Length: 263
Image 1 (cartoon, rainbow, N blue to C red):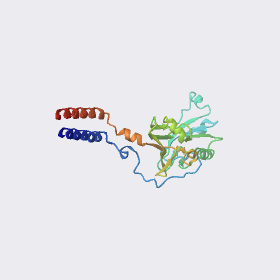
Image 2 (cartoon, rainbow, N blue to C red):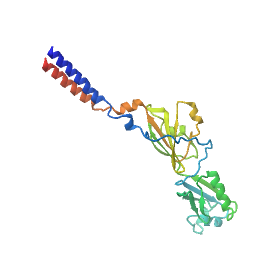
Image 3 (cartoon, rainbow, N blue to C red):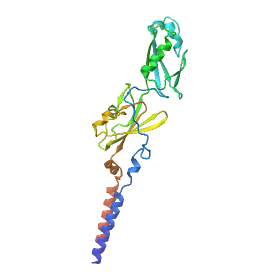
């Protein structure tokens, strides 16, 4: 009777010990991002999907004209006036790179400080054409944002930062760049983090609903961050220690030996 009682105690101890080793060593709070951010500033942006320029945006501005000499003063790097430059100045196309400063301005040759923050590409192009028309006959201006980057984190197959070549990218396109969600991503709780006028704003998407296509935030803007939260299965999986099997096997062996010795 005493022997059976001891065996029972060993079995009970074994079960408890196994539960300790298999118990969660990582909780939901340990692996989910941004969980302490209040979502009381959720956005409802307009349905106008034009990109608006922001501080820290990097732009290229191409200026073209029939008269090379008229364009030359507006180039950041003057071009030597010699025969070899005539080919390069056939239509005097020049790509200049400008960084929008913290005040939303760029410094443009001759024209001085220009406020581009809040303007779309079309609006900035039209403004420059009007200003340049005072000095250049029929100027052709092309403005392009070259650091349109989005970041995708969490349960996607290829998390990282991606540079967008077009002026418009949707949530679906962005997730496609990241190789789509993994099987462990929560489809109904995809978080968008966006900076608007220096303030962080938040919105959430439910990919299970077709209504996500009509969300005012469905089209992304530069520097947006998308985070796909892991589901419960991933949280439980992350708590599994690959050494648990070895440990449990060793404990079971010891319990068996002890039970034999007690008999």
